[in-house]
Length: 369
Image (cartoon, rainbow, N blue to C red; front, side):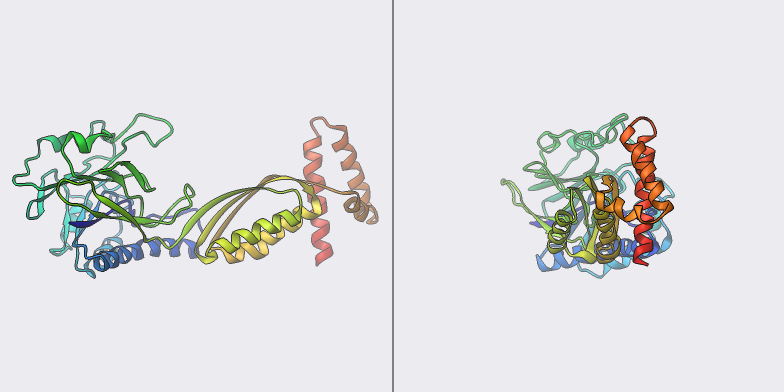
C-alpha cells in the first residue's frame, strides 16, 4: 500500500508582518499546496492522504478558508483523512462541525479516537487533540485500539516526541518509541514544520508550504510505500512554492559583498524567495552605503521579500570620505568634530559614530541627487 503523509497546512495563517502583496501570495500558496498534494497522489497511484493535524491555523477560520480547503481537496479522487491538531483542536460545536456540514464522501474528519479500516486489513488509528495543550500522551490510546484482522496498523497524531520549544511545560508529548509500543507499521506525525525521521516507522512530514525563517528547504510531503512485515519506504516530494532562507554574511568591502550577492541570486529562484539577511564587518562608509543601496535597489526588487539586518556592519569614513566633507564648509567642520569624539572614546563615541555615518549618508544622497 502507498499513501501520502502530510501535516501543518495551517490554512488561514495571517502573515501579519508582511505587506499586503506578499501576504496574499503566501496565503494563496498554502491553498495551492493542496492541489500539489492531490496531483502527487494521482501521479503516484495513491488513494489515501493522511493529514496529521493543524489543517487550519485557528479553531475559528473564516467560511471562505473552509470552503477553499474543501473545494481544493474535492478536485482530486483520493481520500483525505483530517486530524485535529493543537491549532484546530476538536470540540463540540466548533470548527470540525462546520467542516463536516460541507464535505462529501472523500473527506473524513478524525475527530474521535476510533480506529477505521480504510482498506481491507489496513487500520488507521487516530489521536486527535481535544484541547490546544494536553499534558498526557495523546497516543496512549493506541495500545487498546482493537484492529481485527489487521495486516497494517497506521497511527496518525499531532505532538512532540521531544520538546521543540525553548521554555515552558512540555505539551502534547508523544513517546518516541510509540510505533514499537503500539505495534504500528507507521506513525504519521505533525507539529514539527520540518521533515524529521524519528525512527524507521515514525516520521514528521513537515509543512507542505514553508512559513518561517527556520530552514532552507521548501515545503514537502512524504510518499510512504509499505507492506506487511517490512519497514516502510519513505520518499519526500516537494510541494512548496516559496523558500524562506536566512543568511549571515561577513563582508569588509563592496567587492566581497557583490560576490556574495551574485552567488546567492544565481542559486535561488528570486521571485519565490523570502530572504532574511544579516550583515557584519567593518568597511568604509562609502562601501556601506553602496552595499545597502544594492540591497534596496536591486536584490530587494528581485526577491519576494527582503529583511536586512545591518547593525553589525560598521561603517568607518576613510580619509577620502572625510576629505569630501572637509570641502563642504560647515559639513566638514561637523565631520571633523565627530571624528575627534570617536577617537577620544568614552560614552559619546558610539553616538558620534552613528552621527558621522548619518552625516555621510545624507551627504552621499545629496551628491547622487
